[in-house]
Image (tube, helix red, strand yellow):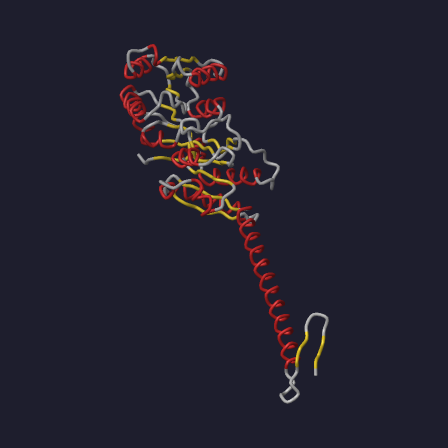
Length: 346
């Protein structure tokens, strides 16, 4: 007997079991099942791949990389404060020490951490991250005394930070409270530095009524040592300093503070470390507040708050060195000391 179809003819031997048609049917069913399984496998692979991609995108969408200058307590405090503020809105963050990033490329770190915003905590971290990442990647910084000194261009887009410096007018207000009888201050500047001249002009503009300013141009003196000597020979009530990278380095600060102790004329320092080194009083950064405001900038960059993505001035407090105050014979009010961060115990 012959079974005919339009495409083929199957011969069935009547003396043998009729299984040819069954084999065809079974083969067709197995092939159909195989195709179904294959389709399901392809579908699951596609879904798994899609979910993986979405997971990576979701991770990248809220990942913030915090780079600390070191493991020092102030940087850790700022980082913890920042992390907690970000966690309030479920923004993920990863913390690393700047030393861990040395000899690694941006591409490698980007694949490893998937950050869309980098946060530098401290000057060393700011200098490193600023060189490492493209200018198309947002950078937020805090606990940085002088952003320009570490290479951050204020004209660069997608960069903002929390300043550790108060406006000159606020600094003078602090000084008046600390030393009510003061009527003259002295400062160093460089006539060849645009930033330094701009600071000098700002000081002249904000100088309180009745105060006298003695400004010594380092560039007009034979040496920095001669400029410092001239500064203290002006016999002002206080030497005021600013975070001017064209003037101050470790050697200058050391010479200035030694001259201060010898002459009995106090120094107003532009950073907490300056006060610890021997300035009578000065500005200091509160790490916790710095971290909170840095978090605000991150949220603003992500569009989660109305905070404008631009530099902020906050988390700056007054620091007082009581050892220096006693040595210079200067008595500060209890009200001032209650608001200040105290350095040293007489």
